[in-house]
Amino acid sequence: MKEYNKENKILRKEESGMTNQVKEVQIVTLAEDYAGTGPTRCWAQHGVSFFIRLQYENKEVHHFLFDTGDYHEPILFNARKLNIPLDEIESIALSHSHYDHTGGLIGILKEIKKKERPIIAHPEVFKQSYYKGDFTRNIGMENEKTKEITESLGGIWKLSKEPVEIFPHVSFMGEIPRITIFEQDVTLKLQTKVNDQWVSDEIEDDTGIYISTPKGVIVIAGCSHSGIVNIVKYAKQLSGKQVVAVIGGFHLHSASVARINHTIDALEELGVKEVITGHCTGGDAEYAFKQRFKKQFQKLHAGKILSFS
Image (tube, rainbow, N blue to C red; front, side, top):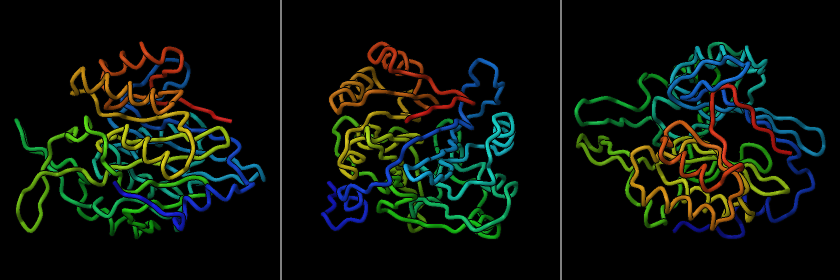
């Protein structure tokens, strides 16, 4: 298991008890597989994207984007419907390389006012990643020149296996230690090229972010190929705080009943209070979470706005 000592930048800041805490968090779902119901009339697509607004005790406000869906057009449409100021995005964090989390990146950067902004991701975000089964498909970044194009649009890539602080008390988690026994099997069988040889893709670039608030930590995942329990455990280790809410895709749509139940048991044991999930989680898993977490379970949909204060 990867451990971090007291000199780690993120741990040191959490332990120091900084007075400028995160006061309010607003998470706007700009992309999700399910359109939902209600007055927003947002477009759905396969993938996720979250616009996150942070307000601190000293009135400071920051905005960033976590993942960019598959296509930029629904994200731009939904942002207009919800009056989301995409021009105020200060940075973008990517959960992993797959097209349904990175496909909208170039289109979004083209539409918002050009200025330099970091794009935070794992170093393997540009790797080839192929599904080879009844059909063959590249499910990684579909544009081979994504790095060059995004840089020409003001993107500054910050690639790290280690945790990266996005804003105070908000961190990109880097490579996730995989310590949970029932999560050792990768959720999706893929292949990647290493020295011109096809090998199993362990999707080591899969990660999440956490937001540390006075009441606890909010964890946001993209697909949780590294295991949602592993992600929550690592967020607790890095922050030193209780995880109060877990948001995103858990990639349990093809998981066994046993793995689904083990996941729910583990999250309960870890003290998670709220589960807000969708995308690749799967209907059976969502139903099981609903049965266990009851009113503390919510299903994601395009246009859904979550507020924590």
